[in-house]
Amino acid sequence: MRGRCPQTILTDLDPGLRDAIISEFPGTKHVVPQWNILHKVPCWFSPTLGSRYAEFKSEFDALFHIENTEEFEHQWSQMISVFGLGSDKHADLLYTVRASWAEAYVRGYFLARMATITYSKSIDAFLKGIFSAHTCLRSFFEQVCLREVSCLVCLH
Image (cartoon, rainbow, N blue to C red; front, top):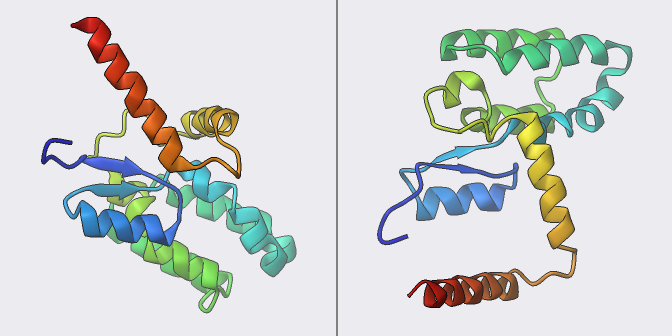
């Protein structure tokens, strides 16, 4: 990357990726697209909340669109209190990484619509067509580098 760091990196909620980004690219904004959170919410909260899950989901969805941090913090605290999620490990995780997914915290970072649900689903489907559980990433990147080199040779 010629000594430069990316301005923004989109990943899932993997804490190892988050830690690596903080360590290796301290000036880079880490963003978790909505889709990577929303598809986990039902299995995380539906069993706990039961019949109140639909109400919770509606309030949780609204959090994505709050534009300032003070309002987000207020609404988050209220939602956690109303639904009794003060000691829930998933609620704690989401709150801990809120600066990576909540609009109030990612607003102003260039994402080129990459954080949208449609984009995330299309990338996920594309990558699943390339990778399997047995894919060695090192060999994948070596192949990509070989293709780049051969393309550069063809251009010269």
